[in-house]
Length: 255
Image 1 (spheres, rainbow, N blue to C red):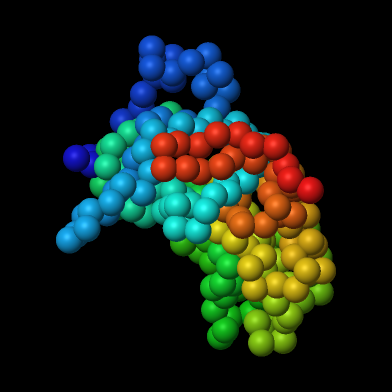
Image 2 (cartoon, helix red, strand yellow):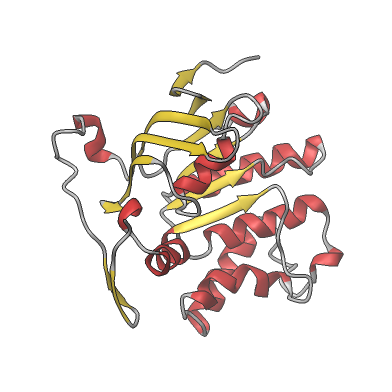
């Protein structure tokens, strides 16, 4: 059962000592710790998607998750983000146990600590580029000069320094994904989750976006998880993990 204490904007999570016996010494530097995570779907034909998933991710680390179609890569991202409930296991972000939080607390955590980049750009067509990038800051109540400065920094960082007043219809697919990356990182999240972010891009734009995504995750000392079918995309990451029905294992890059 999820539980949390929320009072206005103040809220309290259940913290867990990372030195607990079920965690090895490698977890002490990890910012994201996933242990024995499992997911299944009920129905006339119940099926287990995966079980026994363990993952440690340190600040500044960027990993790719690959696997067969239908194995549950996007589902794993949803579990880590608290968008779906796991059957069992533990997900801890900076010592916060996500599986015990209620929906309100998870929403607050996602706004402050997570950034998302999807295959579809999900930009709002009636807002300018700068306004789209500023959305996470607005949700956190951060407006004014400091917010405008941060948006301007991100525009320059993703190579769109002169496009802040443009509207999405005036941008290419590659430029729209740059907007999505800037929006994902503008509020300095601890964890960035990217689900096939280059699936709708031509090869040249894809290479540019992959490089930009990696560089910005590193520059912001965030941790990143990239779900992809592409070996080219996976090779931009520090490690490549293969998701199977029984967990994840590290694999070597393929040519």
